Image (cartoon, rainbow, N blue to C red; front, side, top):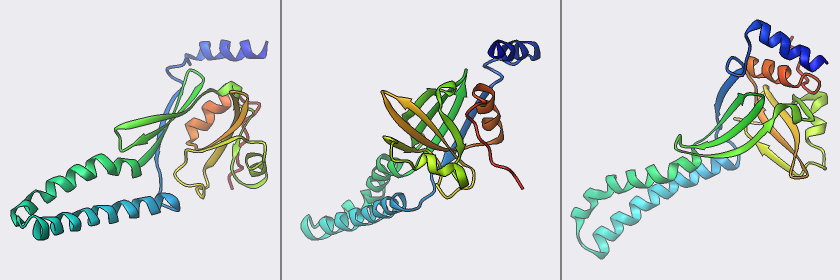
Length: 193
């Protein structure tokens, strides 16, 4: 009966799935393996330019071909840099949490689309709550945060296809309010000092 009361209150105050909407994006910070991939990509662009100049001057003996190097480099960067320019987009629509991994603002991959009510736990990834996210019975870990060292990192544990999964994400104040609205029993929050 308490569930119906919540929806009755929402109807009286004018809240609906369109007013309970969050769209939040974070850019992945270059650190660790991600930073290494970006550095290797830059060295690859430099190597491409050097190899192209060498081929033009030494093997073909046509130095005027070097004039197309900027165009070829731009084309190479356009089609490859997006794989090391990653953003994560979170959306809460109608009680569903949808997370996308966006490559260079052009391509995306869906990381999860889960009903918020099906989460076992949503908590900050720090202090006493971090142990549950690091437990051994988690089959898949998804990092959709800018950096795991960020103090506003939360995690959500859910079950999909019979396996337990954890997803790490950053929360804004409105996101946290909506998570509590759709599943107040499992959302833990940090105490702000």
